[in-house]
Amino acid sequence: MIRSPTPPCPELIHSLPHRSIVDIMDSNSTPWSSPPAPLQAEAVTVAPTIFPRVGYSILSFLMFINTVLSVFNNSLAIAVMLKNPSLLQPINIFILSLAVSDLMIGLCGSLVVTITNYHGSFFIGHTACVFQGFAVNYFGLVSLCTLTLLAYERYNVVCKPRAGLKLTMRRSIIGLLFVWTFCLFWAVTPLLGWSSYGPEGVQTSCSLAWEERSWNNYSYLILYTLLCFIFPVVVIIYCYCKVLTSMNKLNKSVELQGGLSCRKENEHAINMVLAMIIAFFVCWLPYTALSVVVVVDPELHIPPLFRDATLEVLSCGRYIPHASSRVSINMRSLNRRSVNTHSKVSPL
Image 1: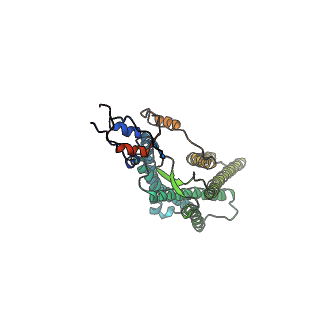
Image 2 (image 1 turned 90 degrees about the horizontal axis):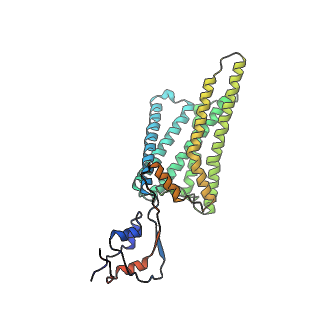
Image 3 (image 1 turned 135 degrees about the vertical axis):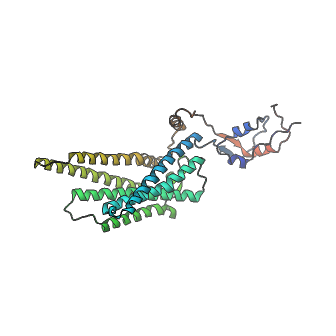
């Protein structure tokens, strides 16, 4: 009499997130036959994978490149400023603050996501997840608000030179203290119960709990979006538009008086400002828009077909999409099969 192989236990099933029940059965090279009638028990749905393995590899590679460039460039900017005290002018203090916050995003955010994507899951625990979400939220807000403060100060210098709002070291430090404190409030409150931090996307990074369904979370996200994204963006666009308009008027006035205008410098400034605004929107608008839509529409779902097509393009055709299926089995019935030693099996 041939004894059938012992099916995997539930603990083994849950310890293998990237394989379906069918894969585990096939690995024994002996298909089960004559299954007993299913008992009444709660069915467990096992997903073969959250994201294809090649997708995690591509994300890990992209995040690695981003981490290297971010850490190198910002570390270099900080070292140059600290080594040359003459560069620590009021306007450059904003650049130093921006470099510090971006460096911390690279170390606490991009580096962690590079490692977790390489592993294929956020394997370093819940505490690390909360810390990573907090760090990215905090230092990302600091970077955005620093850019907003920088735009406002440039607006004062160009558009209101006679208003007496001269940029001094004291004014710069007070402005930055306000920015870092304001951003700390919005980053700490989720730790105290107003919203929360948790896994997002393909579960290899952590952020605010955009998908949590509660009025407590809604109130935070609405105010957060208005005060920490929409308002800074409006200020940046308004200030730089006013700066460009004032520079155009100044050039026309100089030309009418027979002087030499700074048209090339003006065009260079326009291109730089447009590049900054476009780069900002390319980096932040898609994420923010999708996050807000998830809050408004809980049923939003990006179909796997779109992800598969994207991965196929990014991998230059090496990734072949596979239709992933969910297998639902009865765990109590499975346990009963494990003790049934008289089952007939097909020959190998």
